[in-house]
Each structure stands twice: as structure tokens, then as C-alpha cells.
Length: 229
Image 1 (cartoon, rainbow, N blue to C red):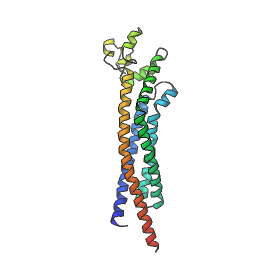
Image 2 (image 1 turned 90 degrees about the vertical axis):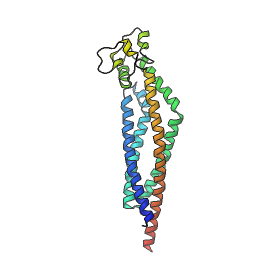
Image 3 (image 1 turned 180 degrees about the vertical axis):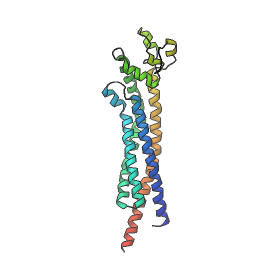
Image 4 (image 1 turned 120 degrees about the horizontal axis):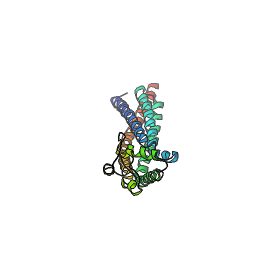
């Protein structure tokens, strides 16, 4: 293999090491998102609210597995392994671009749905305060739109509005907390931006890796062909 082929081989190997790291980071990030909303609403609401984090988790696992395959193909100079990696990388690239476009175009719709989830939890809080408490503790918020929601309904401010270790919670202290709609919306707004821009960055690197993998597979195939003459 000439110098160009060796360069492509090791660049591809380094790319896949980076992909392994990206896959691990996506798995961790998706797990954090799931852990933040795992107790939100009913089972159906929880599943729908977790749809994006679950997609991120699956994407992270797929990237990790494919990257490992790419590392093996590059180091061993295996044509079959490298071409299989190229096909998987192309499919992954297209799927990731589709996910980024979906998140980008459906952002407002998704955030609106999150508002409805919080509103549903608030409506059910008179019969099941535990879910509302979990939401308030997780996002450091109070009420649906603010602490005034409890005041309007002549209800006592729950301790969860002032933190996990609060023995009691006054209206004055609770009013410093944002409403859960605002806090939940802000959390997802920031998370979606991370998914969008990180996804575009990873997709650009995946495109380069796909091109390099094709070049390496072609180089190895040509070397085998020359060796047979």
C-alpha cells in the first residue's frame, strides 16, 4: 500500500475512534434526557415525551457498533468489512440528517406537546400530587404557570416547590420559581438545539469517513488484484 493508502487507513481509524467517543456521548446525553422525564405523566405520555431521547440512545448505540466495525476494517485492511462499514455509514448519515431535519422542523410542535403534557399533569395533581412533585423537583419549578396557580385554587404550596430538602415552602419563596411549563420548555429548547447542531457536526464527519472508507476499500481491492498478477 502506498503512502496515500496508509494515510487514508490511519485517518479512517482515527475518525472511527472519534465516532466511538461520539456514540458514547450520545448514549450518555440520551440517558440524561430520559432520566429527567422518566416519571412524567402516564405511560403513553412518558413514552411520547421520551421519543427523542430514545432515538438519541439508539443512534448512539448504532454509531458505537458501526465505528467499532470501521476500526477493525481499517486496521486489518479487510475489503468486505470496510465496504460493509461504508454502507452502514451511508445509511447512518442519511438517517441522522433525517433526524436533524425532523427535530429542526418539528421543534415548535414538539414544545407545544410538552406544554400539554405539563398541563395534563397539573390537572391531575389534585388526585396524584406525586407526579407534579417529581416534575417540580426535577425542573426546579412551581405550578403550571407559577406559584400563583396554587394560590388561585386556595391550595397549600407543596414543599417540592422549594426543593427536595425543604421542610416548608412559603408563597414568597415559591414565587421566585418559574412555572413548570416555562422550565420544561426551556430545558427542551436547549436540548433540541444541542441535538440539531451536534447532529450536523457529526453528520459532516460521517460524510468524510464514508468517502475515506470507500477509498480505502478500493485501494485494498487494487492491491489484491495486482498481487494476483
